[in-house]
Length: 199
Image (tube, rainbow, N blue to C red):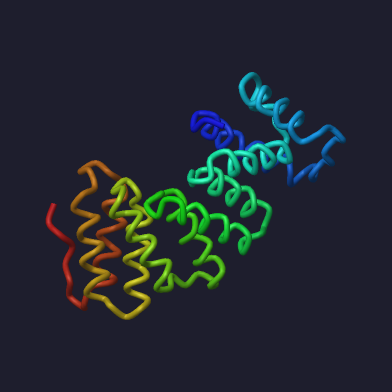
């Protein structure tokens, strides 16, 4: 399966997962696996939106075999599992993606989110490190940078949290509406009497 087809599968996930939740997983037919995969590959190429969640998962599992070093199939499997309310299984899928590419930003962010979810909302050391790495690799991941700063604050390192927030704030465009929110967070995280960074 090509990376283009993986992207198509990823785009189909939102629709597919919703269908899975509503309808459930249909049983696979009695065709040999090679025939089923060939038919699914044709469907991906000609009508990807019609794939059922079970078919999506089957294609992703085949992609894992076809591209053993690619992180994307593992990531998309994790997305499906997480949407099904299986965070522990999703966590393992995201970890599998990162074993193939430790700098794969979508998996870094998703794994961090699952760790926070499993810890009841606490941004622990592992999630903080992963969020920070995602932001370091891609500064458009502002949310990841913010959560890394929150993790530092929750760990009691107010200075590091404030520095991280100021770094992110300084890189936001002047007209970005998030600037006001970051200004307030910097004041809250900083020591009493801290002022917002100048515009």
